[in-house]
Length: 139
Image 1 (tube, one colour):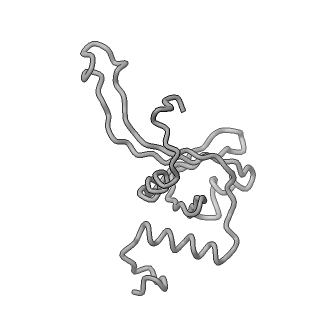
Image 2 (tube, one colour):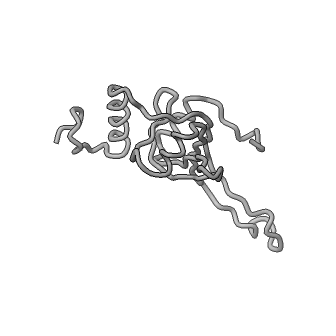
């Protein structure tokens, strides 16, 4: 990170930010060695990121071949046009945002209890009003 004065290391603040965001960008590598970034919903719990999606398709093919991934979540706060500080130059234009980027290994969740817990977290985050047929959210 270039601007160290903006770095946040408090786990509570990072967790609160992640819980308030609904999607991020998963970076994988294609068979040809090209980067691929896929936007997808996520939940974050106890130091783990969980993603939901089909077992078929490019994203899972890439993960099966190469488990090393990158995941980024970002929220933009403001765009500052250059003319705020200089009417002649474009260089002063900037943006203020908060982001979290992590590197790690992705793997399918096979344990049924962990999978059910992760899916329940998805429903709590993305459909908190219920109606999903979950025991915690009867119809």
